[in-house]
Image (cartoon, rainbow, N blue to C red; front, top):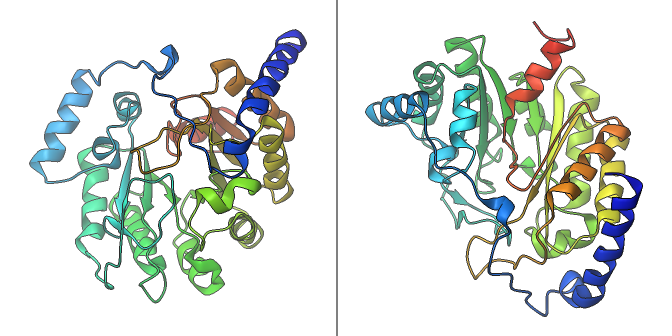
Length: 324
């Protein structure tokens, strides 16, 4: 973004701020934006590779988050041999105000088939990169850390060449359980800060915190420096660009390697409203700033999600000669 466009954007942004300041700070007023901008239009999933993979998954009774979340990037990611799966069941013990996952108490139940199914999926899909994510499981003694680790190990044993990124809960910040996960040696450990510090208490569950997420990411980087760390932020919840930049500074202070920015979309009327749709050029500006600050890899765009084109980081390292 050149200086003139940046100036125009900041002036326009200030006008929006003046009109929506109450919604940005307290959410006592709901700001409704019914129609999505033109840049949210995406093509339906297509291609022989996509159809073949979908058929094979169905035949083997396997499911990806990509399908269940109707991700608009599914054919693009599958074409690059990348996918995302969710473990630890489908019921979360926390209730973040942006998330559409069911909230409740799973009662300590675990599906051990998830371990073998994950290993099976990388073979069926011929994956070179798999993102493993989950709900929060505060009902489990170790918050699900050992189950996560067992999934990572099973994939490594089944297909050693497949790199695994884990998008994990905070395990309540208990270092013993964080160690359990890290010792399974995933390629990337991701934990999402989700939003800027000011909005954390209205966006995330009360048990999740801005400082706790930073503390966890810092712990992984200091104790396991060979593992890359990653986090993601949603935009359009009422934050300012200045706050996003401050968040980036906080992340770089603890040496986070990867950051992504994507537009928040309201899943149902019961969830937080969209305050603003960011323009593509603003996402590009955030990307430029992030690289200037020293992040190793950045993904930024309206349709970017935590695991969007996650394997691009792998390709980036290969191009630089840091990974075979």
